Length: 147
Image 1 (cartoon, rainbow, N blue to C red):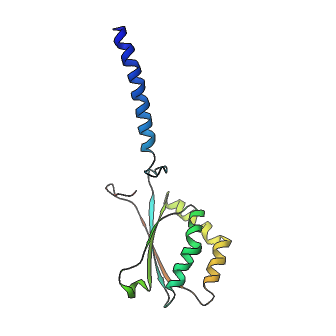
Image 2 (cartoon, helix red, strand yellow):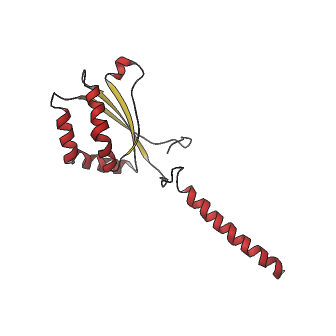
Image 3 (cartoon, helix red, strand yellow):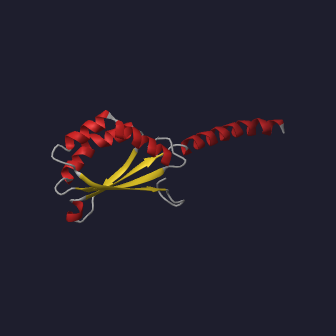
């Protein structure tokens, strides 16, 4: 009996360590980033003024994306409609936030950021580029591939 306990005890320790390692990995995604228990997503649709979509894309590419990250917003992706005429006036993107209240705080600090104000003003020297913005907050379903 003593001999079998001597054999079982090291195996139990190894198994406990393996469980701890597996549990630790379960807390991180495939890229090693810490998984978030619950996020809220924000789908934003921008409608550009006529002939201003290139300027809108440039502002996002050159300034806005970095500022989103600076203010705690996680970029998921950007999309343009497949229809050329629609793509000339509409852009859709998705952000992730820890919560809706965190999103509100991020947007508040973003809108006051001097870098943003400078980039916005510079991009609108020839007039406003955004005609309309729609924002929808989304919760992932229990079967969603992304949460």
